[in-house]
Image 1 (cartoon, one colour):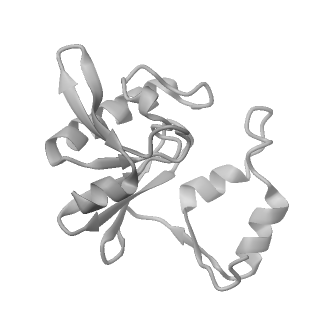
Image 2 (image 1 turned 60 degrees about the vertical axis):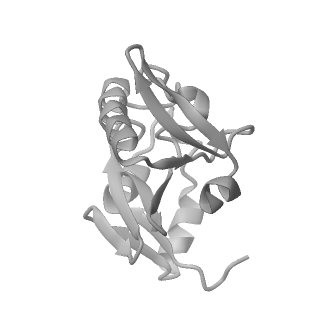
Amino acid sequence: MFPNANHWCSKTQWDHSKISNIREKIAYHSSLLNFVMDSGKLQLVEKEGTLFPGIDVKFFDGHTPGQMIPFINSEGKTFVYMSDMIPTSANIQVVWLAAYDLFPVTAMEEKENFLNETVEKNYILFFEHDYYTECVKAGKEEKGYYVEESGNLAKFIQS
């Protein structure tokens, strides 16, 4: 579909994709992954930091080792593409994890640290898996984290 597209993956995640087990076998399609690698269009990222001007990446290990999360900085706002780290707005609470997270305790620790940073820095979280909610800003209260504001991506870009 996009023959000139380049693909970026953390080296840790790439290495992990080669480990087949009953739980993850269905998620990693080795023939497709090897095709992308052999095409020369796959770049393996070994360190957190700036991938491109305005796009930084951080690694998280609770869902799967080396999951790379992009932080997109534009016009004074930071949009974070949540992928499987926080798959839906319903998963904002620290202990509300997806059943497919490989290391749940690590996922909760990473998520709590990330959400503290999110509230402090006013990040806009952008969800891949949420059918109803594209983006949220999170808040924190005594009982934990909550969706403070929600809407579509256009709303948050324009605000």
